[in-house]
Length: 306
Image 1 (cartoon, one colour):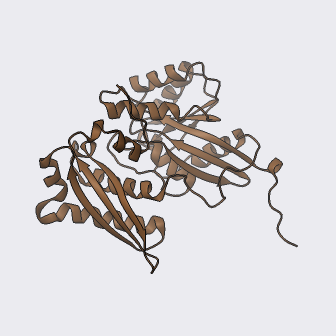
Image 2 (cartoon, rainbow, N blue to C red; image 1 turned 90 degrees about the horizontal axis):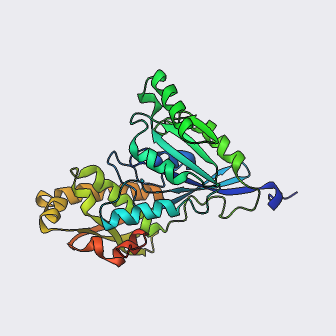
Image 3 (cartoon, rainbow, N blue to C red; image 1 turned 90 degrees about the vertical axis):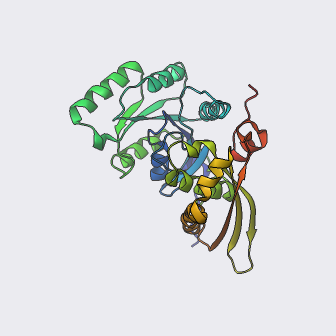
């Protein structure tokens, strides 16, 4: 007999908005919950710029995770766009998942986030992350302080980097998903276009290779993606920087830095896309890219008017 497909009444599907301060570990947790690398990860803060959607399956339940940029006090136009994207990511959520860096504690950024969550009807779950770096006595006090400040529906202590506590968190999220049909095919991991994911991969490698300040002054766009007859892909990308001096740093002595970044990005793309990749990187100076609406559209962000 042919296998029966799940009926609408047997399936569940819902949205989980992952929010938190910069560098709380949101992207690492998303990748852990989905079981694949969807969002770029860096030790530097504000790595995620746009809303990244990851899709996970657990039995008959499909969970659509929205990884948002870190919420912080914006200073530049790009900052405002990132924070706006973060808050808009929770509008249609069935569950809000607040990730707090346990090592950093109950800081002002987390307090500001809780103020904005106050009054929302969507249940909020607390994931206290990086607990492997904090003494147990401190964790208990921090957990109590956070729950005194906000009525969380549940609290979990996790280490997203190695998966500790994530299975228990996942079970709780699954139980909160509403009954209904799946929104995506069972084997789909993200709704982001491959061109966007390719640009994010290169940006991650730049973040990891560059000195502290420079990554925030650049953006990456996939200008061309061509599928070759042999199954490989040719990908042309442009790295936009703000000044000529930054261009020289990205290229490096004799092109060494650009070759290093390109090799790392290509290897990651081949792993993610499961095909051979021919990657060509170009660096261009565009001093006003942070005020260019087209660059925001390419990053999946709305362009703030002011």
